[in-house]
Length: 82
Image (cartoon, rainbow, N blue to C red):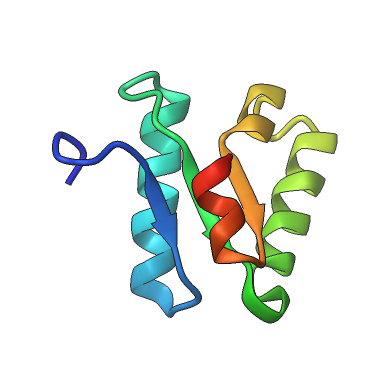
């Protein structure tokens, strides 16, 4: 998946979706790749995850550079332009 992708986009899903998107984010944090990671945040599905990550950054649990890992939008057409 990593070698064959130009970017990653997660749609609302279950635990498997979260596992995969967080694995890709972890690889970005380790500089294994520098590809954009998008969250299609339909109806605010990823709002709690994004708030959790913001809180972790504020508490210095994760690096502030992690702030730039995710692109989030609720409009699919916007994802391709970012």
